[in-house]
Image 1 (cartoon, one colour):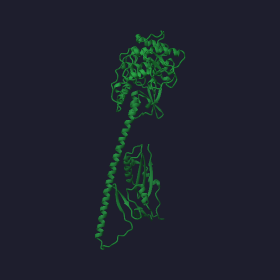
Image 2: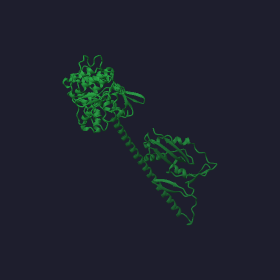
Image 3: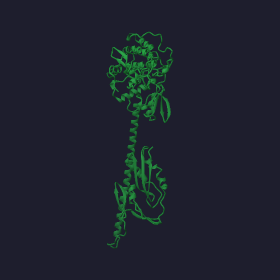
Image 4: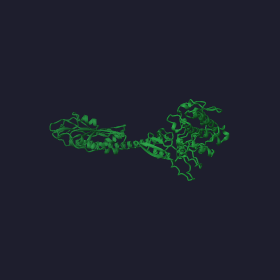
Length: 518
């Protein structure tokens, strides 16, 4: 999006870059004759989009570039100068141009754009005449039905603020609000005092989202026509995101009106003031993907697309992500600690088992009467330790120790294996007299409850898949996988499943279950 040289927009951006703005006399010298020129075009029946990129400015000459005023502008600062009723692409009449002249005038003086979170002009330029705020307040009424429509009257009113600043416009007997019920309450201005001098309650303070520093609110203005305006950018902190958040916070606090409605789960929530919207964003009730409607501007778009609210939505999302990462890390640490404890206990048990076996063998040898006595049996069970987990390792049959039950012979597997390892080790000698297997439901009643997942602090966003090889009422082989992958949670859940009690049966049964992510 490029800026056309030789336009008022180019001059405004050049001054903004150097920290300068137009003064009141310069502004009126540009806009008073422009009102007269554009008023003639409207009387000829022309509808226009009036904005700084459509105004020729050479310092000595000012005029409207009609070809540029035929299309909706692209630059955000130019679009802020378009009347609300024209922002969907329909060029406007004189009533819309009154809004545009007011918006351009405000930006020339303050360097900021008209929109949500605006401050009054005198909060930015304290020496502005009180009459000027009254004129600008009427020009910036968002509702077209309650906005003046006479550009000649607007030119005359602005000229009267500083008669020596501009060439006098053609005389007119009409006043700025002649024949129009101007509703200043619909102006893009935060109220300062109620009628009769009774102060309106102060707006609540915006939440201190980490990353935004506190900025003192602008002093109250006791004039009768408060104007809501965006604070002029501070050049000294133009690239400081923390300062930008603080400036937005201070600006939004200046308007306590409940003008915003947020759409969530198909329902309207509100209306809220700007600060209340920020509070809801900070607590996570609203996110950048929720639509927000400004009831004064009659404009609706996602929170992440509103210049005034998007930075807060991004900061709040970043804070939520950091907290979630901390929770996930804590869960992994707890799971690893539990896993280490389980491994240590299993290691001690294996050591004791080996010691007892060796002692029994020694006593057997000493008590033998024949040195050449042969050890009977065709299977020897050896035990090895892999990372602290005991695993049964079979002899030639490859199926572990052989046990009896129900008329058949069944390999009895040791614990600590994976589900797939238990399945591959199990080789059964089937018998006609073997008792029937248990149903899948009998194991699912235990495994599908999922209460054991709570001990491992499994996040709701994690999918957990479990394969359990069950024999004689316990899980001799367990494999756990998660998506997204989390080794700590895998280890913790596997330990919990191994500790569960299942219906007992001598045969090996394999059951699987998956807990879907929310």
